[in-house]
Image 1 (tube, helix red, strand yellow):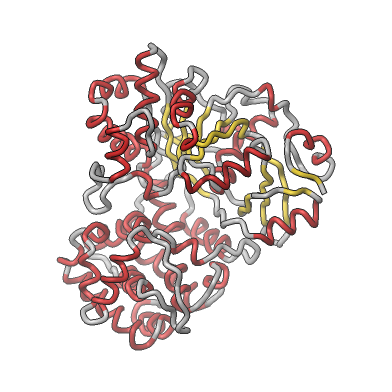
Image 2: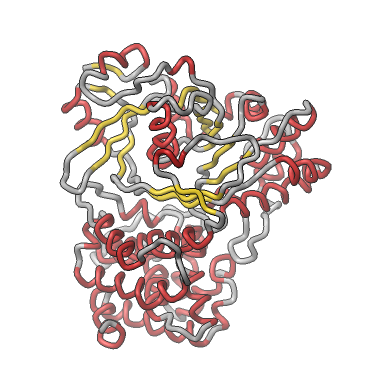
Amino acid sequence: MINLNSNNLTEISKSVSAPNYNRSNIKSGIVHVGIGGFHRAHEAFYIDELLRRNEARNWGICGVALLEYDTKIYQTLKSQDGLYTLIVKELDGSLSNRVIGSIIDVMFAPENPWAVVEKMASPETKIITLTITEGGYNFNEATGEFVVENPLIQHDLKNPKTPKTVFGYLTQALKLRKDNNQEGLTIQSCDNIQGNGHVTKKMLLSFIEHAEPELVSWIEKNVSFPNSMVDRITPATVPSDISILKDTTGIIDEWPVVCEPFKQWVIEEDFVAGRPAWEKVGAQFVDDVVPYEKMKLTLLNAGHSVLGILGALIGYNTIDETVHDEDLSLFLKTYMNKEVTPTLGNLKGVNLDEYKQTLLERFGNTHIKDQVERICSESSAKIPKFILPTVISNLKNNDPVDLAAFVLAAWAVYSLGENEKEEDIIIKDAMETVLKQKANEAKVNPKLFLELESIFGDLKSSKTFVDSFENAYKNISEFGVKKGIFELNKSLIK
């Protein structure tokens, strides 16, 4: 057995694909905040690909663990010199193991906040990328406005030298760059938010208007915020992944990353201080990423939520189990075809029918074992971005919303915390308490669940939607999800 670290790379390279470049010669032109599984399966993989081609010597990654919660991942990567194994689970069940070396430095923000600020402000840093989850952008789901009342935001406003949020760190780093007469940089979101660059800019400037208002004009001139669309299914690593890697390769990796073979990255060309040649390893650069984002969010991400919520109520544990249920699979196909596709408009260069079929194949990868619990986590932040835009668009155009209403009614039942087998559902959501409260009220009057204005906005005022929601809730409560879908299928699925 051999521990994964820099000293053992030569030996490790005899059994698995490993970096063929001298990591000590790489500069960290990118600071990335949020070094979880997705970043390590996606952006860090793309950079590793370039480094292996001798194309990105100045574009190594300094990974920042932002929260106290990130202690374990920081300690693991630190002990492994930033190295980890990417395990690609192919559709045929085979495993492709590859050691990724693009994260050349790791920092733990709570340990030394100002050191992170200085790293972001370093002339060497040209791009700051983010995977901070949908909830990390601190905006009200209904209004889209920055939540300045957040206690952590208030802390950063009062304690600028010891920030706790990404906005506090970015503000102080940009202020330092301005004070030192340095050039600007690019801040790039890699999160599942439509217009993620626009959102990042709006939220950051909203914070800065309270914290350092004189900095706003400098940012407008010197910092870019390109939108991007990212895609690669990356389930949580489980103990068996670590064991199988050790048994098959002899490598002891405390936190490998598991992912599917598919990957996609569509990016707007807007980098003020240069960028890696990501297009050489499969990324696509476009003038307007919004249509591609919308396609991905409302088909793939929404599809995950549809399968996750309905599957959780039935009692399934993994996404592949849900999509191999013929009723759920047919429901999802019909939802994508009848309610989502009409909202997407023209997507240049995209075969939508082929894309949707590929999604079903990816969801059905029996070797990925993406946990339903993971997909359903933080649904209060996901649903407004993945499902509600489709609902709102269809209501505006007098198009059907019955299938989306069924999913949202199922979420109300799910939020009671018990599946149809009378087993407890573990709800991981920042709004868990209020969700359970409204879910209990909905047992008497389903419409009361829609009073969660921060999620649903004014949907409760739409008679069309409310009627569909209440009818779906009644069917699910009386018949269960499977029978409820069957009743819906009779009228909607041809």
